[in-house]
Image (cartoon, rainbow, N blue to C red):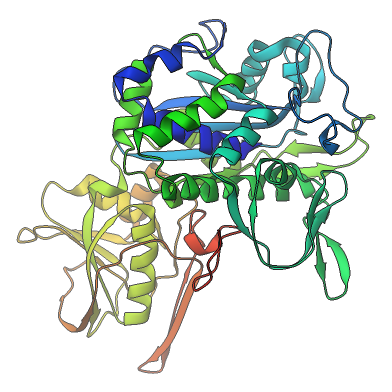
Length: 493
């Protein structure tokens, strides 16, 4: 269900900057949510937080579809939230973050009791769900978007399906997914819905059916849903999603089953669309909360409990605004180091974060710690880069420099793509280096600038009897890491 967020959101945003589509936006149903819960008036260009809900309504879907088996409809017209995600959009930094919240997460629902978070919408509708999210995670929300199964199917069908690569045969006896042979399959709306809803996803491996995700099938489902967003956006773009006619058809396909908050205006959507007209789906930053799964908790069935720890706090801080301000794409630098393989690998990962890499070079000698050499007045840029390096490098000012240079020392361990160090902790670690001499930037070879994201990368090399090892954390948005991505050299649909 979360996949519908990416398809419809991208379609609407890319089209609404055209004035004559205002009418289409005005026709989309609205929900009234208290101004104390949704701060809908924000400054132009300011980051905004959307809560995007995929409810479990199957109204309008073929009565013979297995999705109706065991489904009970509430007389009030309210529904459980089948998927819940927070989407933070920063139009200035041109960055988008998506956080998937497990629907089985146990929380305190205001005015009710401790219960699964997805029940908040069933108990009190959109307003109670928004209040629950705000109080649980301490995140200020600006807008509400709600979609259902019918909207998802309609948009995928409008795209003539979405190609998904299956390494092995796959099935889910409950959702109706059935892929008898491992290959590329163009999933139509119904099959795509069975795929992203699957909580009992199995693959046929070594002669037997294996449940993927083990004790955490819902978390495995979240990963598939997030990656399906990227695949669906790729499909939309390949089908001309930035073309007015194509955009209009996508809007018409999904708008009947979309609900927006009362304060989300066409003008705001136009501003967002203009900032993301060249948005690359692979740059979508995707996160999941760290949780502890449990079963049969007070008759609630499968549940998950929030982990109070640094990982979740770092993730939530992004949606609280900690990531606002200077963006990686504002920072330009070259990378040098004693091992060209290490230099190239780390430059690729830093480029995937958004930094602008101007070149890579092999350094003749680099016996000291890692250093960021920066020109006068570029301390903020140097500190931002330092946050991503483990261990934290020293900072050295060079009055003759025109841009930053990252010198990878022999103490360098990895790039912290997922969880960059807090700024205060970074400054403390920089200060601990004390006075560091400006390194000699002689080189023996050069390579081309980094140009995109990579997956997990490691390189080792023996130099003067000492082993140099670089390990980079796998980018959450790497092209090669998306589940269902068609491998290079293969074609599909």
